[in-house]
Length: 120
Image (cartoon, rainbow, N blue to C red):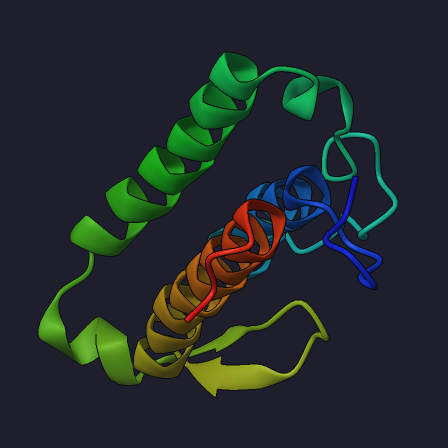
């Protein structure tokens, strides 16, 4: 259920965050062959419960973090593909992934406040 007057539920947002982590990693550090509708990306089964959603987010974040931690300073300037197959500097991709999480964390917090009717 989404917030009053809204269309996206917290579950929808969490699924999007997990899928984005997976696909951003796949394009920046993998073979860039998957699409958003691929069953490995478009996972709704993993957000059926909070514990499985958290595990999935942690797994995707860990994979991403491991790839980033293996980089050296020069690697940060190297172009890699984003999910639109556009080359971007690695540092730009990393910043975008961080900002993506922050944006949706705020969206989830706002949605929770709307449900609790205490959004100030």
